[in-house]
Length: 180
Image (cartoon, rainbow, N blue to C red; front, side):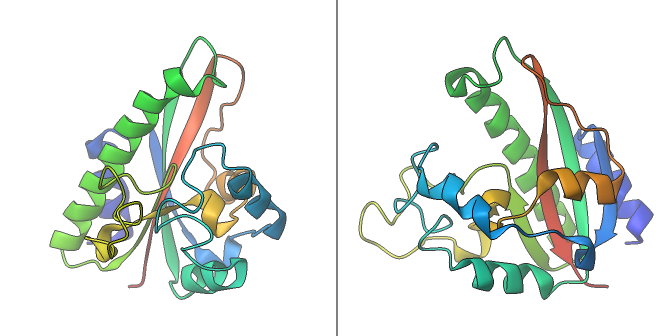
Protein backbone atom coordinates (compact mmCIF):
# COMPACT_ATOMS: atom_id res chain seq x y z
CA UNK A 1 0.00 0.00 0.00
CA UNK A 2 1.17 3.54 -0.69
CA UNK A 3 1.16 6.14 2.05
CA UNK A 4 -1.92 7.74 0.50
CA UNK A 5 -3.69 4.37 0.46
CA UNK A 6 -2.84 3.88 4.15
CA UNK A 7 -4.26 7.33 4.98
CA UNK A 8 -7.37 6.56 2.93
CA UNK A 9 -7.80 3.26 4.80
CA UNK A 10 -7.81 5.24 8.08
CA UNK A 11 -10.42 7.64 6.73
CA UNK A 12 -12.50 4.72 5.44
CA UNK A 13 -12.33 3.18 8.91
CA UNK A 14 -14.02 6.31 10.28
CA UNK A 15 -11.19 8.47 11.57
CA UNK A 16 -11.75 12.22 11.37
CA UNK A 17 -8.32 12.77 9.88
CA UNK A 18 -5.01 10.97 9.34
CA UNK A 19 -1.49 11.76 8.22
CA UNK A 20 1.87 10.03 7.94
CA UNK A 21 4.96 11.60 9.47
CA UNK A 22 8.48 10.37 10.12
CA UNK A 23 9.13 9.22 13.68
CA UNK A 24 12.18 11.51 13.83
CA UNK A 25 9.59 14.30 14.30
CA UNK A 26 8.40 12.81 17.61
CA UNK A 27 8.92 14.88 20.73
CA UNK A 28 9.28 12.82 23.90
CA UNK A 29 8.88 14.30 27.38
CA UNK A 30 10.14 12.09 30.18
CA UNK A 31 8.07 14.15 32.63
CA UNK A 32 4.87 12.70 31.11
CA UNK A 33 5.60 9.40 32.87
CA UNK A 34 4.31 11.10 36.05
CA UNK A 35 0.82 11.06 34.49
CA UNK A 36 0.99 7.27 34.44
CA UNK A 37 2.42 7.09 37.95
CA UNK A 38 -0.55 9.10 39.23
CA UNK A 39 -2.65 6.12 38.03
CA UNK A 40 -5.58 8.22 36.82
CA UNK A 41 -6.69 5.42 34.50
CA UNK A 42 -6.18 2.66 37.07
CA UNK A 43 -3.83 0.63 34.86
CA UNK A 44 -0.46 1.53 36.42
CA UNK A 45 1.10 -1.73 37.60
CA UNK A 46 -2.06 -3.61 36.61
CA UNK A 47 -1.62 -3.85 32.82
CA UNK A 48 1.35 -5.23 30.89
CA UNK A 49 1.14 -2.42 28.34
CA UNK A 50 1.37 0.29 31.02
CA UNK A 51 4.19 1.44 33.28
CA UNK A 52 6.10 0.13 34.98
CA UNK A 53 5.69 -3.18 33.10
CA UNK A 54 5.86 -1.81 29.53
CA UNK A 55 9.39 -0.47 29.93
CA UNK A 56 11.33 2.57 31.01
CA UNK A 57 11.05 5.93 29.28
CA UNK A 58 14.24 5.17 27.36
CA UNK A 59 13.09 1.69 26.32
CA UNK A 60 9.74 2.99 25.09
CA UNK A 61 11.33 5.88 23.19
CA UNK A 62 13.82 3.52 21.54
CA UNK A 63 11.03 1.06 20.67
CA UNK A 64 9.09 3.81 18.87
CA UNK A 65 12.13 5.14 17.04
CA UNK A 66 12.91 1.71 15.54
CA UNK A 67 10.28 2.56 12.94
CA UNK A 68 10.59 5.19 10.23
CA UNK A 69 6.96 6.28 9.79
CA UNK A 70 3.92 6.92 11.93
CA UNK A 71 0.34 6.91 10.74
CA UNK A 72 -1.34 9.46 13.00
CA UNK A 73 -5.11 8.95 13.33
CA UNK A 74 -7.55 11.22 15.10
CA UNK A 75 -11.18 11.28 16.10
CA UNK A 76 -13.05 14.24 17.56
CA UNK A 77 -15.60 13.74 20.31
CA UNK A 78 -18.22 15.83 22.08
CA UNK A 79 -18.97 15.44 25.78
CA UNK A 80 -20.76 17.36 28.49
CA UNK A 81 -17.49 17.33 30.45
CA UNK A 82 -14.33 15.98 28.82
CA UNK A 83 -12.81 15.49 32.30
CA UNK A 84 -15.57 13.03 33.23
CA UNK A 85 -13.94 9.67 32.57
CA UNK A 86 -17.26 7.86 33.03
CA UNK A 87 -18.64 9.85 30.07
CA UNK A 88 -15.53 9.66 27.88
CA UNK A 89 -14.63 6.00 28.49
CA UNK A 90 -17.08 4.69 25.83
CA UNK A 91 -15.63 7.22 23.35
CA UNK A 92 -12.12 5.99 24.08
CA UNK A 93 -13.32 2.42 23.62
CA UNK A 94 -14.89 3.26 20.24
CA UNK A 95 -11.72 5.07 19.14
CA UNK A 96 -9.54 2.13 20.15
CA UNK A 97 -11.86 -0.38 18.46
CA UNK A 98 -11.45 1.57 15.21
CA UNK A 99 -7.68 1.66 15.78
CA UNK A 100 -7.44 -2.09 16.32
CA UNK A 101 -9.60 -2.75 13.27
CA UNK A 102 -7.41 -0.56 11.05
CA UNK A 103 -4.18 -2.04 12.42
CA UNK A 104 -5.52 -5.55 11.73
CA UNK A 105 -6.42 -4.45 8.20
CA UNK A 106 -2.94 -3.00 7.60
CA UNK A 107 -1.28 -6.13 8.91
CA UNK A 108 -3.42 -8.31 6.64
CA UNK A 109 -2.18 -6.13 3.77
CA UNK A 110 1.37 -7.10 4.77
CA UNK A 111 2.36 -3.98 6.71
CA UNK A 112 4.01 -4.91 9.98
CA UNK A 113 4.36 -2.36 12.72
CA UNK A 114 3.58 -1.15 16.20
CA UNK A 115 0.27 0.24 17.39
CA UNK A 116 -0.28 2.92 20.02
CA UNK A 117 -3.78 3.61 21.25
CA UNK A 118 -5.61 6.08 23.44
CA UNK A 119 -5.20 4.62 26.91
CA UNK A 120 -3.58 1.37 27.91
CA UNK A 121 -4.39 -1.96 26.33
CA UNK A 122 -7.92 -3.20 26.87
CA UNK A 123 -7.78 -6.30 24.67
CA UNK A 124 -8.34 -8.55 27.70
CA UNK A 125 -10.54 -7.75 30.64
CA UNK A 126 -9.01 -8.22 33.08
CA UNK A 127 -5.41 -8.02 31.94
CA UNK A 128 -3.58 -11.31 32.49
CA UNK A 129 -1.18 -9.39 34.76
CA UNK A 130 -3.95 -9.08 37.36
CA UNK A 131 -4.32 -12.88 37.22
CA UNK A 132 -0.55 -13.42 37.51
CA UNK A 133 -0.40 -14.93 34.02
CA UNK A 134 1.65 -13.97 30.94
CA UNK A 135 0.11 -11.65 28.36
CA UNK A 136 -2.28 -13.62 26.15
CA UNK A 137 -1.74 -11.46 23.04
CA UNK A 138 1.67 -9.76 23.29
CA UNK A 139 1.63 -8.79 19.58
CA UNK A 140 -1.65 -6.92 20.15
CA UNK A 141 -0.89 -5.35 23.54
CA UNK A 142 -0.69 -1.69 22.58
CA UNK A 143 0.57 0.93 24.99
CA UNK A 144 -0.81 4.44 25.05
CA UNK A 145 1.07 7.54 24.00
CA UNK A 146 1.49 8.54 27.67
CA UNK A 147 3.46 5.33 28.28
CA UNK A 148 5.74 6.37 25.41
CA UNK A 149 5.86 9.93 26.82
CA UNK A 150 4.91 11.34 23.41
CA UNK A 151 3.95 15.00 23.29
CA UNK A 152 0.60 14.82 21.50
CA UNK A 153 0.42 18.57 20.83
CA UNK A 154 3.77 18.45 19.02
CA UNK A 155 2.71 15.24 17.27
CA UNK A 156 -0.42 16.97 16.05
CA UNK A 157 1.60 19.97 14.82
CA UNK A 158 3.98 17.70 12.91
CA UNK A 159 1.05 15.86 11.32
CA UNK A 160 -0.88 19.06 10.56
CA UNK A 161 -4.15 17.69 11.93
CA UNK A 162 -7.01 19.57 13.54
CA UNK A 163 -6.59 19.66 17.34
CA UNK A 164 -9.63 20.19 19.55
CA UNK A 165 -9.46 20.55 23.33
CA UNK A 166 -12.01 22.41 25.38
CA UNK A 167 -14.57 21.46 28.01
CA UNK A 168 -17.00 19.96 25.47
CA UNK A 169 -14.92 18.67 22.54
CA UNK A 170 -11.63 16.87 22.33
CA UNK A 171 -9.34 15.07 19.91
CA UNK A 172 -8.21 11.51 20.52
CA UNK A 173 -5.19 9.95 18.82
CA UNK A 174 -3.78 6.57 17.86
CA UNK A 175 -0.63 5.70 15.96
CA UNK A 176 0.61 2.89 13.78
CA UNK A 177 4.40 2.86 13.38
CA UNK A 178 5.84 1.10 10.35
CA UNK A 179 8.65 0.98 7.80
CA UNK A 180 8.39 0.86 4.02
